[in-house]
Length: 253
Image (tube, rainbow, N blue to C red; front, side, top):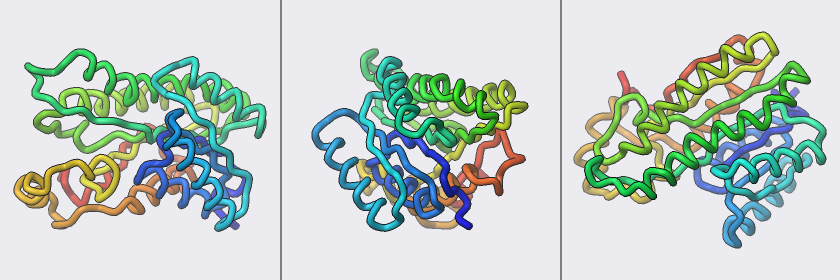
């Protein structure tokens, strides 16, 4: 028996490197996936391609629903479409995220607000939108993507680190609010993973600053994050809530 058979799973930011690994791992465990990303021609095409791949590999009832998670009206429309199609939402994976880097004394307001909008407001809007349905069913799994940068900080990442730290506090608070309703809320905190936002990191900085700080001496794979998400989404983790699962090769030791 697959661990997530029949579970309707809403994944934001699903067409990026980390997102694609997550939806593949979730679908492999029997979940029906709602692939979400921005409403752009490129993202829309990638989402449709991903849906076809999932259906060919695993079967199941997978759909793509585009929308900007930083806009509450978009999130409400996405969730409405999910409920109309499936009648429920079992699992939410808040994976969408962006990083715009500047030193704190020269951080443009518009860039700060963009990062806050996706990484924090987007997480909150999605949680707020799905909880009425999860509370009604007395079942839910919410997994929010934080980061080791939200724990340690990093130069030039004031907005990104602030949002990822805030997601931890948000998750712990919501976990307390819904624990009696059969809903768990946890975070995955990736370290330096060879996918997603790491693609734009300068190689010189990676080799000089990052690699020596990882006790395992290597970057993680997108599949490492995906396995952590599947674990927290499954009943293997049914008595775990308000937790931050670091997947970082020992970076935060």
